[in-house]
Amino acid sequence: MSADAEARVDDRSTSEGGPASETAAPHLEEPQPQLPPRRRLPILANLAAALFSRGGNAIALVALPIIALQQTGSPLAAGVVGVFATVPLVIGGALGGVLVDRFGYRASSIVADLASAATVFAIPLLHATVGLPFGALLALVFLGGLLDPPGDTAKTSLTPDLAALARWPIERAAGAQSAVERTAIMLGAATAGGLVALLGPMAALLVDAGGFVVSALLVAFFIPRHDARPVAGPGPGAADADAAQGRVELVPGGRGGFVEGLRFVASSPLLRSIVLLVTLTNAIDAAGMMVLKPLYATEVLGDPAQLGFMVGCFAGGALTGSIVFGSVGHRFSGRLLFAACFMVAGTVPYLTMALGAASAVLLPVLALSGFAAGAINPMISTAMYGLIPDGMRARVFGVTTAGVTATMPLGAVLGGLAAEQLGLAPTVTACAVIYLVLASSPLYLKSFRGLRTVG
Image (cartoon, rainbow, N blue to C red; front, side, top):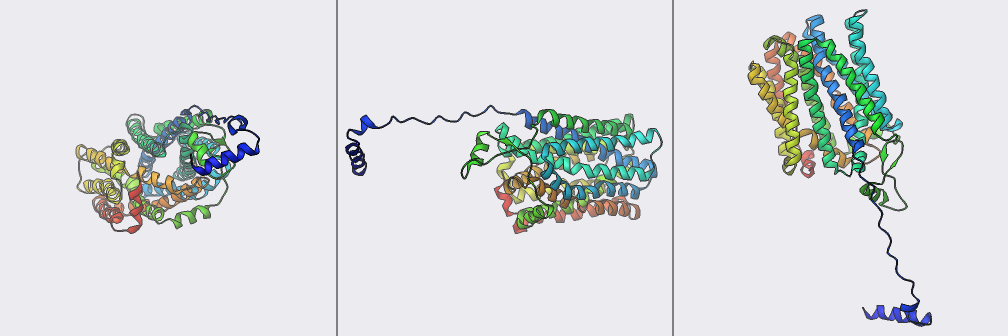
């Protein structure tokens, strides 16, 4: 003990009339707070709900272009369906994030899924009863697309808080979320391919509607009634401490506007660059998914059902890639890996299609390109979760959804026009070249340097 400490003890013992050891109150150690048991069920239910809802979207991506081609025989008509499927994604992304923040993640997810189920079910119902005019098909596709972003945004926004309840690291939750998305696309596309081959595209849409109903029930029964969000205690840092220990109070979502989310994205060079890159490449992918790949399956491979297997192989490779990336690939994440994955994921399959490859060649190539794509979403998601503060997630995710889908309608129309006027092979060749230029941009744009911190 130091001299100063001894002096303080002596002074206290003198002033109190006796030795400090006799008069001092015994020291009581404060009990450590008991950690509540982990609550894994809510995050598992959220992941399962995303599996069913996104799997339904994958079924629709296969079935709707085939329905348009069967009804009209025109690639441009398939492109128009693509426009009506993607324009509402922009609107739903812009407005959906604000609504989700206002009404809460759980309620928004349930309502969006049930409404999506109703719009999808209406297509085969009309077809089997009074008939399905092309205009009615477009209207239902538009309405269904309008409802998808709020549901997906709500489930994505729930992830960090449910991860806290389960005491999962956010990187693990982001990786699981990406794996579920990839699995949903793989299973949904394969299911659609089988159903289209056996029963036709209308039967596939019935399964699609059922998936949305299951998703709504999972959220309704297994996720708490309010959005899980850490509540600050009496002092700075209390919210972080409570979140770390799993103590969360369930409160309604925050309020705010689309403009606030837009400003946040605009203020971050990394977010701006990611949104711009994905926006431009999504235009090419919209043309590929809604026009070029259905045409390739129908005209080159000679079987529309092959589209489901094309999408399924890509998604299966992406699932494997996301698992591998989550295990070891995050150690090497950065601009080089990001750009390389983008180039293999986008350029290689379009180049293979330009060469007129048979399914025995094309399907493994799509699996390889999907493997490369599997690393992209976890890198983006982890970066976004690290940048976006609590209370703004739905708004920022809504802005990014609107941004990355903004050019998809134009891509679908231009893809349809180009395929009709120039032919399939020149169009997919142009897609490969443009994709290569865009995918290499992270190598020379300084704003992507922030990706080196991911993982």
